[in-house]
Length: 416
Image 1 (cartoon, one colour):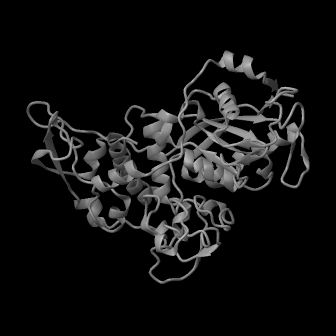
Image 2: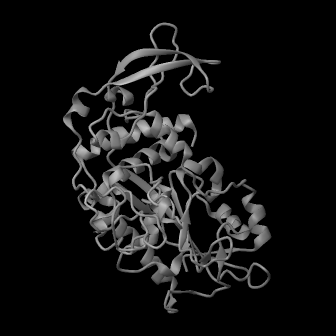
């Protein structure tokens, strides 16, 4: 994520966080340490942010080269002015296209217990998954996923080196060719690719799914979306893997950011959101249902229900798996990096300086944690955090669809 993009996201998600906490908090807030979120009135009513412009080699430029000089304080600005006179986005409609590749020519999928799954049953499972997601998980936050048509079945060639799709490795060349053929070519639309068994690039089979972050769209190209094993999708309860990977696709990181081997490295880095939702990343603890949160003040173990954790408890209370900081981050990152802005919607505005039309930029950081702590939101530190958060997206160059189809011999089976 570029510094300019990070600044836009930081300002937008902080403004949306304040709005959501006051008007439409996420159901999961009450389950995190500290309970329901409250933003002190002094922040909302009297907070001002110092804005400074740094004159670099290219004129007024906060993000200019190191060692810029001529720091100029341009006076206070209210938090509302960061977003201008606007309306907050409170709901999102996201289209979804789903593709499934059979393990071999006309061989049907089997579930985790080895039971054959009829194509009609897989389509029923996928439809029900998105109904559950809309009813219980993302829907209550104002995010609705619209499944466009049925699952599209694809058949591998009858024979040859590309005939066996029973096991697929992450970022495997043939997988990427299939993704290139089927990607919807719209970064605001979710493409879901289902395979039979998924492994890491090194062959480790401990991989249920993976997603591309909106932060990496410029590198991801046609790989943008979610890849996961079809056989782990349950019929009558939400799929933790699908919900978790969609969270990544919307821009969320793990609540522990990354797993660590040593206790002394635990809790050092989180998802860049609220301190209260930071969970343990130690490999011996990360999957435990009950954990002592990293910033717990009472050292009491609590159930970790958050969908972006690895806790064995996630999904036991589906409605309470996301918090307001995550909600604000998803809205801000999806809107700014995927969907774009509609007329009148809140967005980061960079007001013009008085006089010669020189842009004036905000030289302070914006943070949701600052608001909860009763501090004026401050932007630079959050910008640095967003820029420095790493993802695992790969690069891709879009070849000809016709050329790929001719080369690999895949057949779209339609609504069989």
